[in-house]
Image 1 (cartoon, rainbow, N blue to C red):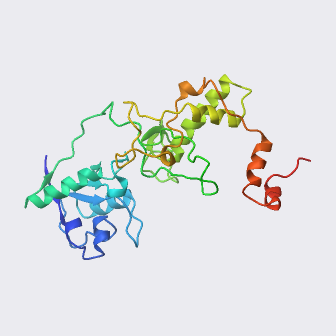
Image 2: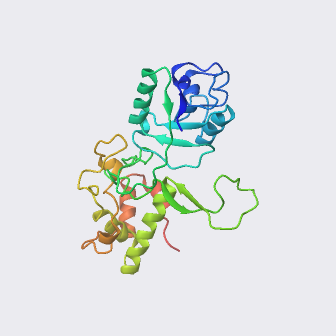
Length: 287
């Protein structure tokens, strides 16, 4: 069933706050606006004077009587969208869709919208690609050191979760397995740690430096289609975004060549960055 699509949030300043606050569906931004039974367009992000989480946007739209929400990226988020728990029917769209939806709203006096679930979509392209929130290099201390070292899966990862999604941590636990979909370093780190453990199981005598070398020298520099790895704007990502490339666990266990580093090599490197007194604080002699 189609619902009216509210254009008021981004086209008119909110009476209860600044225009940017209204666009972002902050607290009080819908006061005096008629959105009851409508699908409301809200943009991702936080205003200059407030921090507006997705759940806050949901609650604001829901309390105002909205029937649903379109969560739309701004330019910095580009094509990246996240699977998140919402308080009401919602769909997260990229920046290109945001622009198209606003153009549609301007084209008709009675815009409408539907949120349809079409099931899981497999084989999407491009993949992998770099997320807008992924840390970029170079190393502040030494731009000659490649940072990040490599990249791994970390967006919309389905994983076990200690509590039911939507329940406060202090709530009484409920029986049954719990799952959540999370994005960020906390999701890519387990992937890379697991691959490091896999390499260690195949080469028990290898040092951490050798394992890191194996992961970096075998990382994929192209996506599944053989094209350059793209970023959130769908342009080729540079080395300070991808590092050595996207981790490849099969290749990492048999890299053919690894570069090892001993403790003294690290000390020599530190001596090139700091004074002897400063290095002595970090690298103390064994007792």
